Image (cartoon, rainbow, N blue to C red; front, side):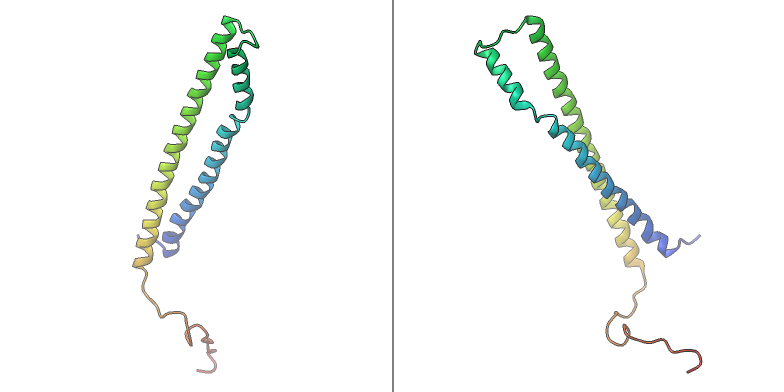
Length: 129
């Protein structure tokens, strides 16, 4: 069964469109990681005030604070590694689609270039021939 030429162009093009959508999705997810650090100066100021003795903190609260910090660091690391894997996968898929399009385009029969009389040729009606 011979594939239609349109399908050979459409399949990699559709995959490339999905890859572009996935890249936009990945950037929005990475944006959430950055937004999670927006209140970092407030947290640093709080820790500095505890270190300088301006505020007191109980040992239980200190342990909870360290656990919260470690959990946030773990989640951030997992999210960054997942985004990295996704971007690598999308890059490989993009490269494969480009190769497929190049293979299909190179297999197409060549025609006359679209310039001059070929571009502006008016079809003659069957009556005039």
